[in-house]
Image 1 (cartoon, rainbow, N blue to C red):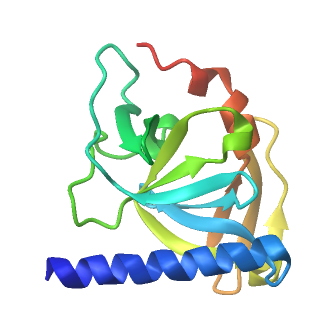
Image 2 (cartoon, rainbow, N blue to C red):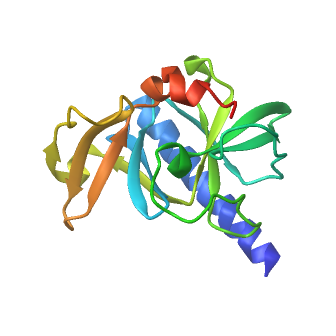
Length: 178
């Protein structure tokens, strides 16, 4: 069974890599990576999202915020691992490092943002373009700086756009010490 899961993960990664490459070359209208985090749906801009990783061993770091899960070795370098739902204070049970075999993934922030971090997401949903949505609401003034517009898809499902550049510059995100 583990072999089938590895093949499925590899196939998913290959499909996403192909679609990401097409999006960067203009062959697709995809603008966002759609993810689920603690039961909520988010859109991460492709231009600021980096590589997607299966969840590796994450070494806890003492005296840090609960949403800072620790550090992980990804592609030969260390990256801070952030529970995105915990950071955004999504109501849920206590944050835990996902067990192997789950749908959880790490989405690295693009190197252009200058932050060596990856976001823990519960599930990748796929790529989305503007054509996948039928309605949009602007960002409410009282929301944090990382929130963009709320989009509604053809099935009536709401998605929250996140501004990863603003996230990478957000003092809360940059202050991992407890």
